[in-house]
Image (cartoon, rainbow, N blue to C red; front, side, top):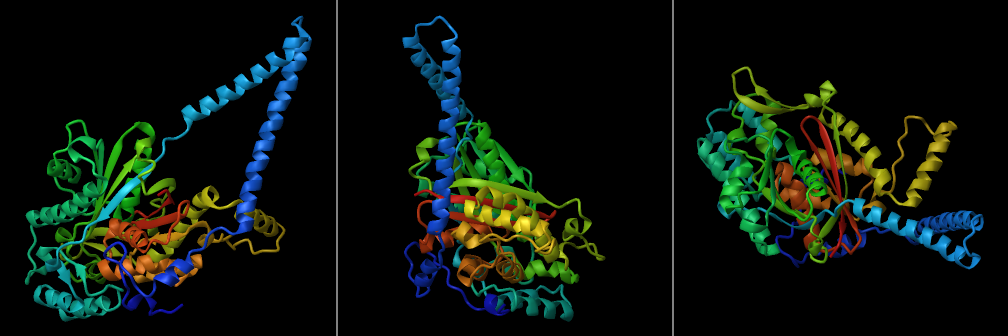
Length: 487
């Protein structure tokens, strides 16, 4: 593993159609199911149809036998038997149609790109913390060292309050940060989709882990765009960097409950009120790693969006390891010895992430892998039971053939590097994560959407391709969302 791969500059396309010399390699890197995989899928479907045919045939023979025991004219026995079987089949299809889940369409999404005045380079960041007046030399040296090792570039964004020397923050400053990223993302989204927010939004879900004002953040959005009075709203807080995918999972459940609706999801994190001026090194990490950003996502189950939506949700999986003390304490907000509130990122985080990811994959992969990979797993399982494979070894499917793009939460270079090695991904597979981390920093719950925007702009996906979004958050949570490309 090249430890420096996450520290070099990365290109991030800022507009559709932007060209770069690495684009050919990105297109070439996409791995789709081979002919054997496709053939097995067709064979399984064919077998299912054959089984259905024989079941219907057996039912017909049964009813025909019963008819023969009656006094009904033999000429009509065949027709009556066939009609009964046809009726049962039609009723079965109708019941399936009524009980099938509503589709979950990702109509469109947009990410916030703040004004250039909010940009901060490494040099400017160092000047800010030096001018803060709250750090001793040991804390300054620690943050300077981290700033050069995080994988962040020279054009990330900090809110206005954190540009001040010395830094001063207020509730008004925190609200202003939210207003900026919220309006930038939502204005883009409404322009892309052409919807009228005052009429067309039925449910609003917002998530921000560390800023929970009253009125709530979802109420702020409702007020900003004057949404209709019947709109339902949900505000998630304290759920860390994976809260964006928690919001998607919640939206999916709501879309299965309420037919013919549109849901607006807004994901962000607030830096203004959560800047840490203390001395605990584990809490200082967030100063150097987290940056300003946000994303707005429009989801719907309206079938009128079918030909316009970008993606359809295939599956979501959530794992919560709050039962384990080390996972629960891995990312923890508390007051230090001087009474200063901060969020400590513990050394055990990577171990806890690995454990949660393993369980998440155990739930996710059987629902998305091909039949070829299932056969491989069965062979692996049999060999393991026979003692030919170590019982501690874990079956790893071909992730690159299962998914054609990856949105791994840009939580830091160690997270991305570790997942690339464990999942056997290429540098090109992880480029959306590294480029997002370099260009925007860790924007917390919205980072997977900056990665999704990267994938959209390089245009490597075809209809039917799948994208895997993966994020981790305090608690500790591991959440997955799989999307299928529609249009």
